[in-house]
Amino acid sequence: MISRHSHRKNEHVSLAEKFFQSTATAGFDQVRFIHHGLPEISAHQVVTNSTLFNGHIKMQWPFYIEAMTGGSPETGKLNQQLAMIAEQTGLAMASGSASVALKDPTTQKSFTVIRDHLKSGNVFANIGAGHPLADAEEVIQLLDADALEVHINVAQEMIMPEGDRDFNWQTDLRSIVNHASKPVIIKEVGFGMDQKTIQTLVEQVGAQAINISGRGGTNFALIENFRRKHKDLDYLAAWGQTTVESLLEAQTLKKQVSIIASGGIRTPLDITKAIALGADAVGVAGTILNQLIKHGPEQTVEMIQDWQTGIVTIMTMLGCRNIAELQSERLLLSSDLMNYIHQRNIKY
Image (cartoon, rainbow, N blue to C red):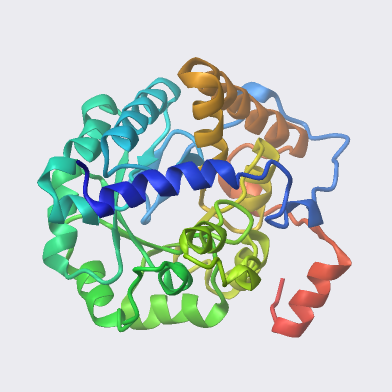
């Protein structure tokens, strides 16, 4: 019999699939590129390499398979398939939260299987913000990881029936960021970030990479509320900032820290828009998981390869030879986003 923690991992995957939305809700439909009729470029000139941590982490493509699974036999099988897909497509991959592996050694294989099958790409381990440096280091070593994601998830924990209620995290976060053996990404889990949070992470915690992980993708407010006996917190389903709003919130600090975008990434156009809004890399979770569960590994590989071609296509049409040039593109914003920028006093 699997533990309650492992059972929760299975529930999360099942409910993430149940509540998956294929429509654009992360805000990318409110931004658009301006077409250039004379880009003066050939597609073979486009370079899609991206880096994090001032070049310490090098990525062949500016997007990767974001944290989703691990902690049970079923999610271990998904991790194996995702790792094989990442290896075949040249992507990096993040694991789901590995805190369960610290409590239950029988679940460790569901995480170590990632490095077993992803030999050439970057592996990002994942742990919650409430853990000390020793736990973070154990997870890094367990996955033979190239970097560590530490997730902050106040809203999820508060809605989760058995969630934490103590969120004094900064001391442990600072210790992990400053002393972990691998570089650290501080990430949300789908509720977005504001300027204050980003500024605190940079100036008080010392974060060098932040994943703003906005609303519009996997919705842990819906997932955890569904697990509640009376499902009484449905009014929090739209809590948080969208991915686009969160990228706008990061504008003033994007030159001081590597910014990663995730949450509701549905197409290669979403990826390029996120990069144009300042992201150095983009994490994709629900769309890839949905494709894998419904259509299998082979069609998931085909989808990712189509996305890779799509990124080159869009960059060519824009006349952008590399990620830095794509980041310099200005987007046309909707009136709603302009109103958001005005109320939040954001310079864009």
